Image (tube, rainbow, N blue to C red; front, top):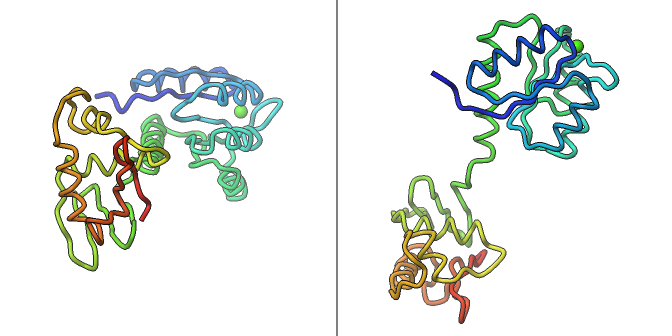
Length: 231
Ligand code: CA
């Protein structure tokens, strides 16, 4: 079974190992690009949104530490797995300090490498997962479990209510028209004539707002629709 496919950049100057890494990762279902020196790694790694970079420490012209530092400036969230023949603690610490996420010491087994690649990917994904909990105006919105907690008492939220909160929160820099909520949360055409959005928001306010008549979380924007109120 293939693992979660990724776009991976392999940076390794030794041709035999480079080929082996490309074969191994391609065989595991990933799309792989390979380069053989530091400057090319920086160039490709900043130009393309790779899911992960496999970076050799000892490279001609620009070493892995420096490549890592430069990539981090442009792509702080990019998972970087360092490869090295040196297993010293000092190198490991240095690599992690400049922003490598994990370290594999050569020689390594195929299975170990693939496992490390997957583990790193999972960690990166978890860190960038859509927000599940929001604290606002003394109310804790636990979107993952469809509930809101205020003053210690918990009330259940429907998937539509969670969908509204998520959409407004994700677009909190602007007001969101009713038609957009209909399309995005209900999945129906935005020009549908219905009071559903207003009714659902009215119910939602009774659950989450301190004073539903003077909402501070889901606020009305006259002539437009609704907006995230930030408490
Ligand atoms: Ca090398």
